[in-house]
Length: 259
Image (cartoon, rainbow, N blue to C red; front, side, top):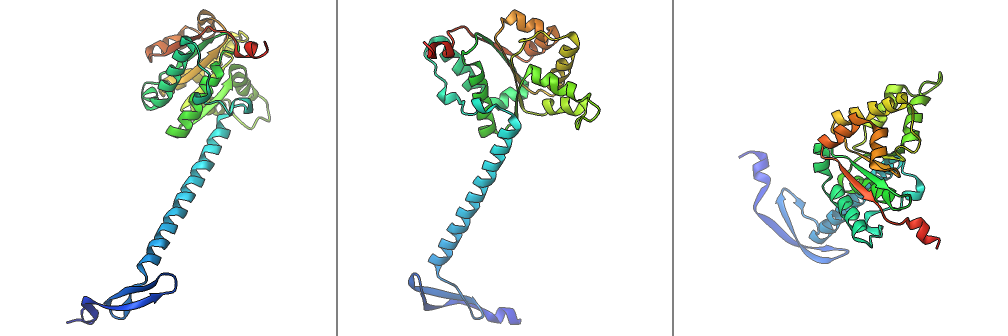
């Protein structure tokens, strides 16, 4: 019999011990002179360790959320927008909210198809609220990356790379807009840009199409004007991926609030 085997106790030795916190407990010795500690202390230590691990996980998740929120470039005015606080009173508004919830809840399916959507209608009808609400939810529940930008800002970012001292190349600027899982483009067609600017925008949207990256387009114009601005190539890609057009035809919330 080797030395280790001779020091193993079968059955284990037992004795009463005293824990300064929990009082008497039964201690066991399975090997040599090594006696077990208080079970309740061990359980409390494990629970404390698990709680600390959960707190650390929550902290990291919160930091990741805050980082994603910052990367999303959602204007401060809209950062409180959520699907749950969108006011849907009419059947049309309720239909728009149902669409937004379905889009966000099933974002994994949306991503697999690259399915985009166009929100068109009057100023102040909640297009941005619903789009940002979608973005907030998919960041929070799907861990998705989101970028919010106006069309003018997106084009300007690319054109700014042409400056001699630009810290970003044109390719990098385009890649930054292709990377996010969801791109929200606001103010589509506010100013009908040149064909050159439309081609820049097409480069972004075409790469997103090829990578099956969904995009949401928001515009105060009619769908015909939006189609004229985006161009037939982009519209064809939207149709191919099952893209939707959501009309916002009701009264402006802003106008009603000032009455």
